[in-house]
Length: 404
Image 1 (cartoon, rainbow, N blue to C red):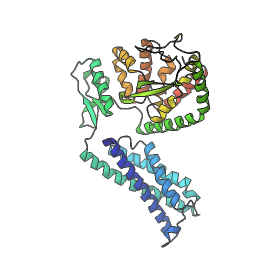
Image 2 (cartoon, helix red, strand yellow):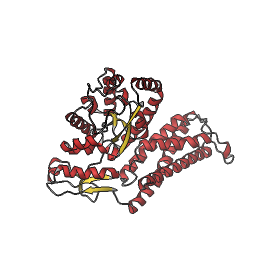
Image 3 (tube, rainbow, N blue to C red):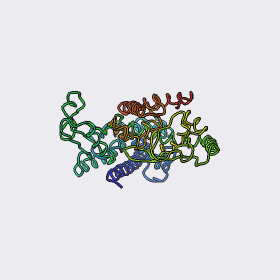
Image 4 (cartoon, one colour):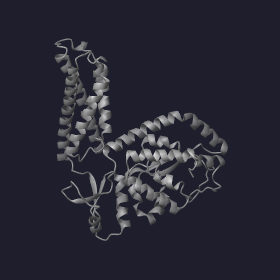
């Protein structure tokens, strides 16, 4: 377990204990103030769902909200102002959620009690969560460097290819990558004054989506890919039979691609070519490629061959929306003309993005570079709204059979 994962676990366990304490204190408050009870704690039936069930569900609900807020994404280098704001907003959402889901159905009939309960629950939720978080964060800031990062400082006038080579080497570490700006970066406004001792840096690995957006996107990936795999199971079976009958060989085809942080992973596809069609030097496919089976042409036209990649999405290798992952051989060729390819490594690759929609299947190096430029534009403008837009465009492409 890495230091980052350990620190994330510390925050998660602390938040879970805080949530338990909040619910117990809240029940005790209502037990004493609204019920006037002094003994028989085991008979507490407020809210109406009983004592034990909310004791389990409430902390789970809190952790879900905390995850979606993006709080656990960066366990080191937390900004105190952002931690305060994130905890405050989370407390509001949790208090309102608990109020409308559980409390409003309890035995209390006076609406003043509802307002008092909501105020007390929010206060407990914020204070009992924020104080432990703050203490942990202050402790970490003393023991751990402000930024767990890699700083790249190249001499003035260094060719871009050399700079991107250093960036490419740094991505697999998973650490934040900062580049000391040159004169041109100051003139174009690319350099920004950062918190790191007030020095200007360019955050290469910084994602342009908020922490909450990143976590919501990942949660959507998990839910949609899981339900997609379940719902599409009959279609998977039909396609598997078609592929098996089309030619001898396995149904699924596994191929190594490069993904997040420049790390390799095995992508899954329905086989669209004859078995052992690619030998020796990798070769791009085209519409008239004799290696593609008759069934393979249909699958590729509607991109049905890529449905097994829902498993890659569920595992975390990929996202539903993101740059298409490529093989290292072709990446090396692309980088000869476009050394900035490594900028795609800051996010997970995806099933679809602007590149595949605009360019389709890439059967030439020029098309691969064109697709790269669309994908870079996506990375620099990433948002949940844009993801939804791309998914709708992709559905249109599939319906028209323009996957090639």
